[in-house]
Length: 335
Image (cartoon, rainbow, N blue to C red; front, side):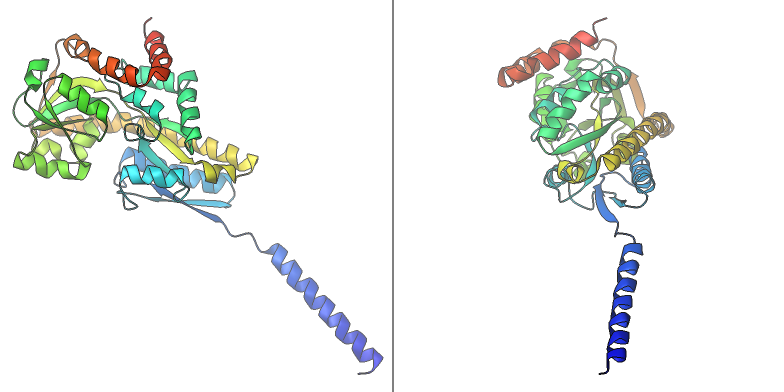
């Protein structure tokens, strides 16, 4: 090859290399795909808020992160999903703090009966220093809290009669979530606690395997439990927040800019969920009333509260390091 031809070939190779480099630099980096877990159907307040979270993260990171929410627990049941998020197999999820207890012991404080006076006081405390303490405990176990969703107050419902005093619970077979505190709570009332998966409750109520359960109005209505358990008694024994949280391993890979964007998205979703939850609670209650459900106030909750003293004593005997947290929550509501 003559010198002129050699120079032309060298130049062509150089230009081709520049073009390839320029094309590579101009191509946007592949978006990071996040997977999110959710137990509820798509139209549920929490589900709508999670979709908002996904959209906000996508927009605020300019497409660098594209979350996808998987509804109806298609990625596994709740305890497994919490564990998957802790180890990074899932990136985010909306979890009830009840099933969080076995992995984050401090979360069990939120499952103590009557620990919060109302949903309003729960929000007030979880949005402040108390909530920060729970978030810190979760982070130690691989979870980053982005916001506290509302889950209403849980009350007893059954197939046979209104519950007005603890005596009305005696002998009743009551489904509870899988947590020893809930078992102790029903046992203290003289009932027979039956831990059971949520999806098994309707059939169990129908067949008499259980006499009743406890939950909030939206869950009572959306599950169809109101069709077979026509007595809903406002014991309001549990006010347990839910967490919009993500895997710490995923969080730690984010830039400070994207961490800020994700936190902002979490707050937008949290505010929306609380508003939608209030609306859905009222609508679900009305649906139950229209179907003929008997809803009754409990004349004196102090009778129920007094019977919870052994539950508290047993819990604090096993978890003395959590006594100050329990005391601080109670003191904050004493005014």
